[in-house]
Length: 356
Ligand code: SF4
Image (cartoon, rainbow, N blue to C red; front, top):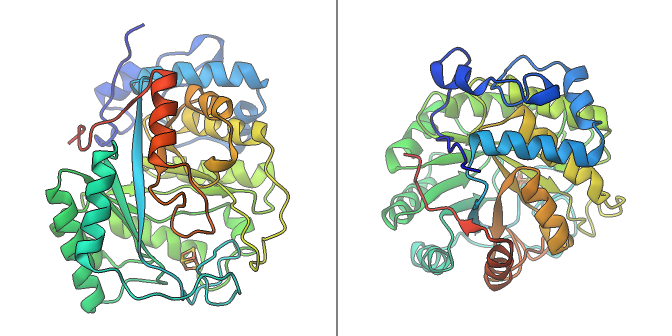
């Protein structure tokens, strides 16, 4: 079957020609596959609760309408400023409020970051995300250094993303001018559940940062975390909030909680795999053109489970040279294991910046 590959950075809107061509009924499932911003909770819940293999099948159909199913984007997270964060995110190893064994470290220098990015590129990575454990971006020398890093990594031919906390419109414009491709700022969970996870900033603060980024050409990366003690209703509400953004975020990470000893969520129950798979498939159907990123927590999944996630519409992973994501507290498969997995599954890493 030939896939209809769609430029996920085109930001299609309801009513444009491309969207109306896509808005065909998907068999008995009605309008699945259309780009919509008016999803109602009961509609998303009905999708979520579809018998599991039927849900995966329908998500795979939607995936093929909007993406090349043979491609997976491999990303690399670089923690350019680790630990010492003043925020109280209840899952995070980098919060200074919890004893997690992750100490505050100075910001990485430019050459170190470029070395990591170069090795990542040599291992099939097409997108590098630089993360700093900050509450918000400050207009200081460290931000100037981030801007230089963005320019330099972009010059290597890679997509560059940053996750630096809250951001003003003016700061977003400076990142845009430096060549930033995407800004990550996760909503984490539903607005209702959010206040049980983070008290030092509000859900509306988060949405404001997303709005600030949207005033520029920088694309949006925002998603959530499974395993924060949320209900299915919270997961549905998160997807509804993401889908109400117009345009949809180009990138939607679905994380599985990596339980960090010392954090308030260090003893949470594991997320059963079928719940992860349902969330991936539901995200694929509700956000059909977005890249759905199987993110933190992937190290817990078997190859077969990951394959099911790719079938259900996940089309990006984070890989690593150190066996960890931002910190050692969050394990990640490494480049060699991921290359072997993609080859075995007949998948290929997506080229950088193909859509621009
Ligand atoms: S998730 Fe980000 S903002 Fe929250 S404590 Fe961790 S580093 Fe700070």
